[in-house]
Structure formats: C-alpha cells, structure tokens
Image (tube, rainbow, N blue to C red; front, side, top):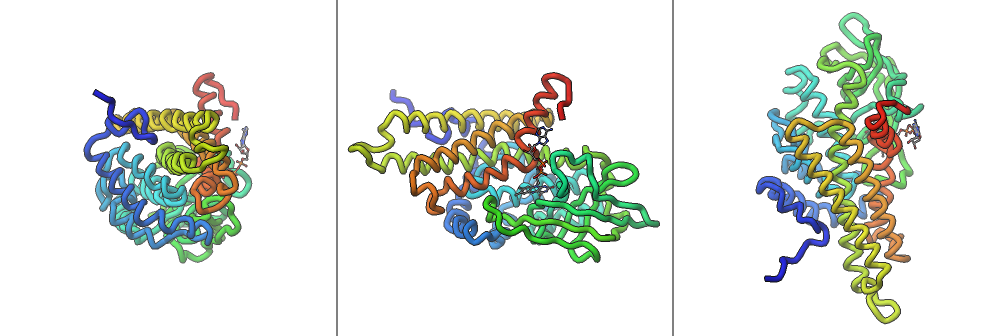
Length: 389
Ligand SMILES: Cc1cc2nc3c(=O)[nH]c(=O)nc-3n(C[C@H](O)[C@H](O)[C@H](O)COP(=O)(O)OP(=O)(O)OC[C@H]3O[C@@H](n4cnc5c(N)ncnc54)[C@H](O)[C@@H]3O)c2cc1C
C-alpha cells in the first residue's frame, strides 16, 4: 500500500499527536486567519497600523487569556494555546504579539498575583477585548538588565507614587490598562495603572521597519498616584515579570513556526511555477536543498514546541527550556524568512509576498522577550552553573 502523502509543512505529522480538541482549536484559528487576517495584513503593515478591527473577532473566539481558567477565559491547555499562537503568527507576528501581551503579560499576572477584586474587575473585560493591556518592564537605558530598574514607586499613606519611563511597549498607544513594574524599597512590585490616571502618558513610536502592524510606544510616569489596591500583592522581585515572560516566550516558540510555514508554503508554490534555464526553479538541486533545510528547521521546531507544551501541561516546564526553544525557533524562523526572501529574487522585496514582512517582523521577535544572546546565556548558565551576564 502506498504511504499517505505528507504535509510539506508538517513532515513528521505532529498533527497526529494532537487531541481532537487541539486540532479543532487549530483549525478554527487557521480559518479565521485565512479569511480575516491574510486579506488585510499586508495593507496594515504598509500603513503602519494595528488592525484593531480584528480584536472583537479574537475575543469572540476565546483567544484572549485562552489558557486561563474562569473569569470568562477559555481554559484551554498549553498545546492548544501554542497552536493559537502558531496560526496567528502565520498571519503576522503583530497579531500574535497583541494576543501574547494581552494574555501572558497582562491577564496572567492579574490571574496569578492579583486580588479577587482585581480579577473580577479586569479579567472578564480583558477576555472580551474591551480592556486592552500593556506590560511595562523595559526601560530606555537597557532592557536586558531589568534588575537595574529606575522606575520606582514610593509609599505615601495608603497610596503609591510612581515615577519613571518605559520604552518599546507593545500596545502602549492603545492600552486602557498598564501592568507596570517598579522598584520599591522592598524590591520590584507590579502595579495596575489605568489610562487617564493623572501623570500617566503614553506615546507612539513611529517609523518602525518591523512589526509595523503592531502599536508600540513609550510610557511615562510623572508623580502618578495609585492606591495600594492597584498593587499586585502576590509577588515581589524580578520573579514577577520574569514569570510572565516565560508564559509569553512559550507562545513565541510556537508562534514563529507559523511565520516560517507561511514563507515556506509560498516558496514551494513560487519555485514550482518560476521557470528559469528551461526548468522550474524547484527542479534545481540548490533550491531543493534550501527548501529541505527549511523543512528540517520547521520540523525540529514543531517537535520542540510540542514537547514544551506537554511539559507545561504536566506542570513541569522550566524557564531555561523555554529559553532554549525561543532561541532555536526564532532563529530558525528568521533564517527561513530571510532565505525565502532571497529565493523570490526581486519579487522578494515586495509586500505582495509574505517573506519580507515576516523577516522584518522577526527582527523584533528575536530581540524582544529576551534577546537571542540573553537566552543563549541562560542555557549556558544551566550547563555550567555560572552566570555570565
Ligand atoms: C517591537 C518591540 C516590542 C516590545 N514590546 C515590549 C513590551 O511590550 N514590554 C516590554 O517591557 N518590553 C518590550 N520590548 C522591549 C524588549 O524586550 C527589549 O528591546 C529587549 O529586552 C532588549 O532590550 P534593549 O532594546 O534595551 O537592548 P539592550 O539590553 O541594550 O541590548 C543591546 C544588545 O546587547 C546584547 N547584550 C545585552 N547583554 C549582554 C551580555 N551580557 N553579553 C552579550 N551581549 C549582551 C543584547 O543581546 C543586544 O544585542 C519590545 C521591543 C520591541 C523591539
């Protein structure tokens, strides 16, 4: 009997290891991306515009805070929420970034470290997309070293007074709520600051050549007074923001597979139909080696992500494992996008083809949520027991 045909985007048939529910989630998000995202995303990228009109759709599908339990959230398992990221990033990294920030960096800390009042006040409207969040950790003087935090909060009676600035913050220009991390005399604490609070302002960063369909900005805190009830009481120290980043990096490790799949899929079609020197490009050895190399990278990343997801669902996932996967999968995806761009020749610089958009986006993804170097150093520390940073 002949073997069944393999999917070029899933050569080891990872899909066969998924549960029915995980497949259902993946298929419904894939359909939404095909129908609603792909027709508009190149235009949004060119216009440097976050496609906000998609937020109600993301919310209606339960994609905001999808792995959280209760408070209007879908309570999906880790693999399903990873697949959501993969399909969204097949559309564009901006969309996955929006969902990651909302879910992992804003809803997660409220869910895990917040009071019951904070949870009931913020989580249901965040799951419905009515409140958009942003996460303020990075500061202008250097994001790789968050322990050197200058933004500070001082106790004043029953209130806190926050001063400082945050830079490169996803969703900052459109957020209603900011989870901001500030140094206090008892270490780093997280605070919930609503838009409109006196002294709190956000500005947009223009002229980005990457993640142009994402809204990125800076946050300024000038004598911003918030009551103690706006502090996240369940955590102090760097563990707070770092635990949120572990959640978001997990999503990135899955998401970037989608970006690479989008590029490879387009290139298989293109090289089969482009005839040079009397035969399709795809019939040349050099092109096939490059396509095969991409499939190898994507397949390895898929297996890594799946194992990460299973570990997470068993409650055994460790941050250094996420570092390894974020590093490997983003590097793979960026290399795939750059090589696809090249194989398109002149057409590769046009927004009509997806690779240059994914390539430019991935230049941010390899930098944010811990640069490649920082993740390599985390793995190095695990191997040697010595911190080199
Ligand atoms: C589009 C975008 C969206 C973002 N969204 C958010 C957000 O929502 N919230 C948020 O808080 N932050 C966000 N960031 C910030 C991001 O996390 C930081 O840019 C990142 O952590 C790097 O910090 P930095 O830019 O200050 O670079 P630096 O920390 O100044 O690093 C510069 C270079 O030095 C290298 N380096 C640093 N330390 C070492 C070392 N010890 N040894 C060797 N090399 C080293 C780095 O790898 C990098 O190549 C976003 C960034 C971008 C680009």
